Image (cartoon, rainbow, N blue to C red; front, side, top):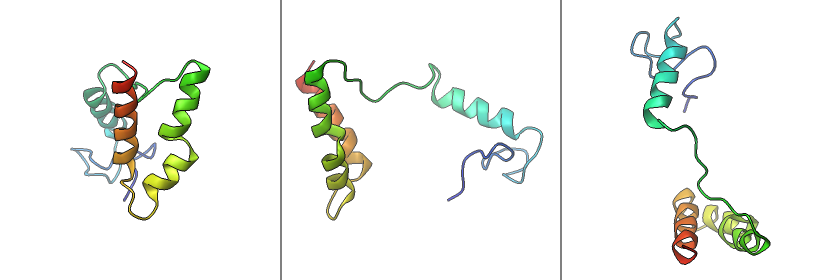
Length: 90
């Protein structure tokens, strides 16, 4: 898989189809703004010591190893862990 934009070429450019042209950067920026109109936002934030302890269970080393180990659910499992944490602490 190639990078979406490597600073010179935007792989989904409608003008050059990723070969590299003067419009690649503008096309990459426009697509980013379309997908993220309010800019980047964190998946989760943890502020207090208690929240930081919970973060270890949600996105800590053990959670990452489990999610990406044999039988794990990958990034979907991490996102589900975060959603469960948010639901329990809302």
